[in-house]
Length: 173
Ligand SMILES: C[S@@+](CC[C@H](N)C(=O)[O-])C[C@H]1O[C@@H](n2cnc3c(N)ncnc32)[C@H](O)[C@@H]1O
Image (cartoon, rainbow, N blue to C red; front, side):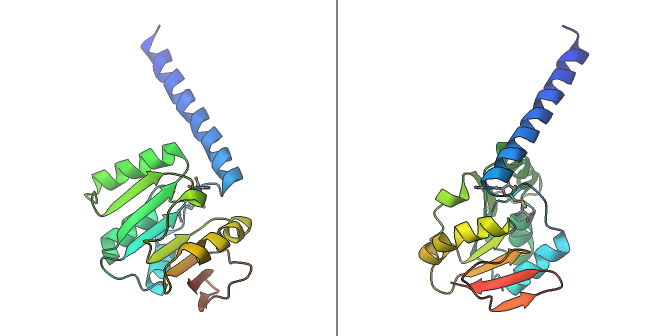
């Protein structure tokens, strides 16, 4: 077979796999739509992330939140991501940025992730997904842990702080 055809087939297979996993992640929790870096920094400042704290980004996409938290706030960051292509991409970004040991991504469904060690949780999901996560967060998080959500809120949880312009909401467990 012509090598050009082989490369074209690989690219198409990758694209189709990406589209399928994007749709599946969207149906299970939220599709990948990245948060801009300025908003990420506002979220991390609002959550008052301190050096050495454990931060989980639930649905970590390309890893930008955990990388920013590790790099600028010296947090020990963990991304939980369902889409294996995003896990691979984020892991490559972490390795090429010299953040191995400071930030990592686990390939997992956040509905079954163990969040008991988290000091800070960051979210950018969907309203229905936040509401489905609410009982788990309230049950598992240590008292005083901070949850900062971009755009979406919770049903029975009142934010202690809100930046309505940037749509960032802070909750305390
Ligand atoms: C809107 S994106 C947010 C990405 C990143 N947190 C950011 O702010 O740039 C949501 C991410 O959640 C992932 N996701 C959706 N459902 C999930 C689940 N049940 N478990 C883990 N990740 C999930 C998607 O694949 C996607 O990457």
